[in-house]
Length: 194
Image 1 (cartoon, rainbow, N blue to C red):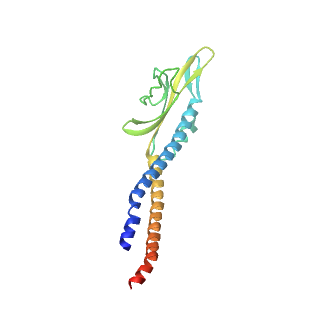
Image 2: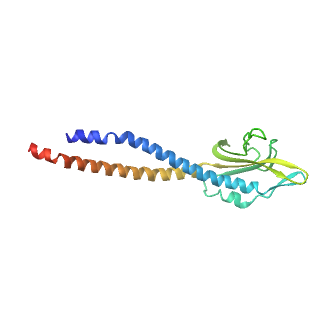
């Protein structure tokens, strides 16, 4: 009877645990992606703030801090590019970094965050479209900043391990309390059997 009770009480914990671990993974992955994307976007905005149009020529005074904020890991690599839009003529940065399609000039978006594959590595890239103005002209441009995913994976795995460890401790505690409660509940029946 005790074995059956424990089986009926603890067996549902297996699918419940699997669902909870998937939800924990999804929540940690979303939070990690969002926080790293904000840093990536901040770096792209810092570069975009330094793009000016001087006598019909785009000039970029690349701020060192814009890329320094991304170099928090030795295993990650950062790539950037400032290009004229829509021609793709590179002003500074990596020439083969692909710019996404922003759509039409009127109804299109001016900020895209996406996964790309660049030089054989999966990366996360932020692309910001803006325009530089002078008295006589204006020129659309795109700032691209891409980063490899090494540090994101390390952070995701670290927090996922901690969450699963805490969850497993909780499952062991619940199983122990269930075992104690079943033994306590069956004590009068055991006394009656004796």
